[in-house]
Structures are given as C-alpha cells and as structure tokens.
Image 1 (cartoon, one colour):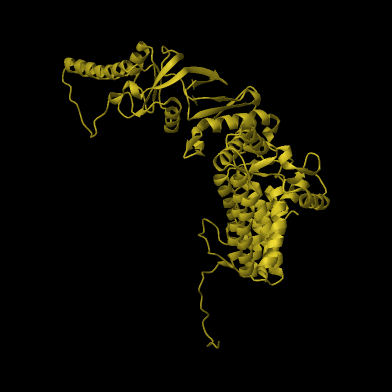
Image 2: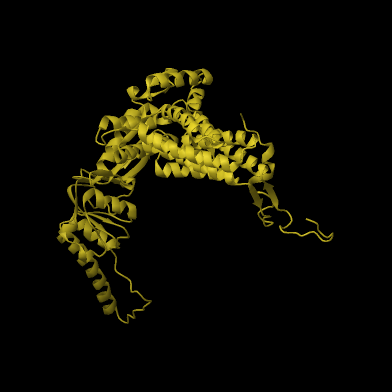
Length: 548
C-alpha cells in the first residue's frame, strides 16, 4: 500500500525484541528440546543421575524428572512450559515425568522436520491432535485389567517404579512398604477404591540403614512430651485431640484489669489457677490419658496434667492432627468443655522415643488406621531424600492401579505398539495430516530408543530387533535393558499403570501443540532494575549448543 513519506509509526517501545513466524517456532522448539535432552539420560533402569547445586551450595542428587526440572532455574518461556508438563504428570499420575518430557521434545523435533518441508503448523497440529486421541483409544484397548486387591501385581508395579533410582538396592522392602501403606489408607466406595495420599506421612531421620525403614500403623510426630514428670509411654491409650490452647483465654477486646490490693491479686491468680485446673479435671474425667494440643499448654496446666499421669504434646501441626484423627478414630474438639469420652481415639501404645538424637512421639497399634506413617532411615540426608522420592513415586503408582485396575507392560512395549498402530491409522487419515500422524508414531519410538541408549546398547539394532519381535510375539515385548535383548515384560513382571502412560502422552502432545501454535514472541523492554531484552537471554538462543 502506498504511503506518504514522513515520520515512521512507532508501536512498540525501544529495546523490545520480537521474533516472528519461523524464527519464533525454531527458538521455542529448540528451548523445549534442550529441556528434553537434559532429562533424557535419566530415563529407565540404567539412567544416569543429575547433581543439582543451588545458590546456597545445597546439593540434590537424583534422576527423578519432576525433581530435576523443579530445581533448575529456567528463564525461557518455552522451557517453562516443559516444566509444566512434568508437574502435571507428577500431580495426575505420580510417575512418568521423564517419559512425558522426552516424548514432548521428540514430537517437536519431528514437527520441525515437517515445518522444514513447508507443511503449515495448523496441519501438524491437527495431525498430532488426531494421533493423540487415537493413542488414548489404543492404550485403553491394550490395557490389561487386574484385581486391585492382587498384592503380587501391586508389588511388581511399585518395584518397577523404584528400579533405576538410587534406592533400587532396597526395592523389595520399599515396594512392600508402599503397597502396605496404600492398602491401609484405601477406602472402598461403590465397589471402587479411593486413595488419599495425604493420609500417608513420610517421616525422615538420618541414622541406621535404609533397611531399617518401617511402616508405622499410626502416626509419628516430630514433637516431645511437654513436661518431664509426664509418662513417656502409655499403653491402651485413650487419645484426646484439642484444637485450642490449654491456657487462660484472653479477652476479645483490649481490656485492663485494675488491681488495687494484694487480696485482689491473690483472688485473680487463684481464679486463673482454678480455670486451668477445671480444664484439666474435665480432660481427666473423660478418661483421656494422652492429649495432643494444636496450640500452647500453660505451665500450670502441664503441672496438673502430669499429676494425673496424662501424656501431653503441644503445638502439633494441623495436618498431623487430622492424620491422628484418621488413625485413632478420635474427633478433634475446638473447646475443652465439649470433650466427651466418645470423642477419644484409641491406640495400643503412645510412646516418646529417641531417634537420631531427637525425641519423637509414636502412636502405634491403631485398630484400623486410615492414616499411616512411613519412617525412612538412611546413612545421609541425600540417601534419605532419594529414598523418599522413590517411595512417593511407588505409592502413587500403586494408588493408580488400585483406583483404575489397569496396567501395561513397561520397557517401551506400549510405545512400540502405539507406533505400529498409529502408522496403520495414518493411512486412514490421508492428506497432509497423515504425515503428522506418522511423525507422531515415529516420535514415540524415542522411549525404547532412549532405554537402549542409556543401557549402552546399539540403538538402531535394538530397535529393529524389538519391533520385529513385538510384531511376532505380541504386545508384551519390550527392551530388557539388563539382558540387552527383547523380552516379554509381562512375564518378567515389569509393568506400569495405564494412567501413567495415558497422562504422559496427553501432557506431551498438548505441550507440543501449544508450542507449535506460537508464531510470534514479543518480549517487552524490562525496567532498568530487571535489565532489558528477552527473558533469559532469549535473543542469544539461536547459537545454543544442543549437546547432541
């Protein structure tokens, strides 16, 4: 369009950087792929670990994808979107975070190849959406139904999840702890299990070895008995949970009490003492011999409680109070006067024990506890943290199987099956979208390929072998990275929940599609204190080394 010469029209402020079209896509895809490449080496039983060092010099050694991405300080917006993939996967399924991120990175790599062939992003997006939807259907078809009460299957699921982590040498014990904990807190509603993982508490204490870790059918609280004269162990405990302070209440509004003589002072102090004594008398009358208080306990109240031989613990966290209620069957009361014998919970024993130089309260032997504690032991902080991460994943995958009752073979077997079936589906789709469906199918092979690569095997040879065997021997055939050959994963007991795989493909495809939709990146000029330009040096991303 013709234009009169004159002053140019300025829309964006000076210092704004903008990438449009192919440039924007290339940089976003590159950033996302770098994240995928970073975690890719941690995938599978033979995956390597990452050492993460923060600004204070604290170290985390792990191969858990969610932890790695959570700890890295990322600047690039597309890279942050990949972290969201991991977070969603962790929240929804509990495991498979690395798988989801690696698949998302490979989907973008394949999309870039199609973009180089001048295929429009909208066509790729449509093809990917069709493939992702079809993949969900195929996974449902090939899933194997299992009985949620089948302990053997649950143990295999938990053990597969722990394999490849630092805690692998104790996987039999840890898998057993995870399965027992989940089964204990699971609740059956309308014939289906529901598991609230908030009811499983992890308590870590340095000392002993990992093999000393145990499941406490009750609650372990990192507190101590408030008064030295109180008993340290009570059997057949009747437990009161109180949500208010055992102290003299202060007035709601600011008030002054004028005392003009010693007699008045004495009567005032006696009244305070009587109020506290009445509170403790009422607790004793209900038959309670253990009291957990969410707030403080007055020194005088402590004295009276000790006289009655009642064990008391103060400033217990709200979450611990709720777990105590679920474990012991006690009701949390907000007012001491409302406490009745029916509100008390029961435990065979409540005891203060010393662990690693610190006192802890053990509430054990509850009748049918709906809250339990896994006490994790280990030689160092790093070991304990890694055991906790392994147990969290194991607990989550056991929950998935108990709730859904469906499993898949692991070891790359579902991805190979999906790749084969999606290739056939591409022929039905037709048109240019078929190219995107084929690219999606090809991208899924990154999982068996990475498993082989991380085990030091010849990836091309291994992939050809495993696909051929898979077609001949059935959908259970995946890569046995320990033997270095194709094997039936179901026979070997290497299995994973259906939910993990479905969510991984859903998260990965949605993230890839979202990144492909972006054709314009505008980074406004920052304030002087923040420094100008693109976030995280986006401008310099073009020359980044992919490390491949």
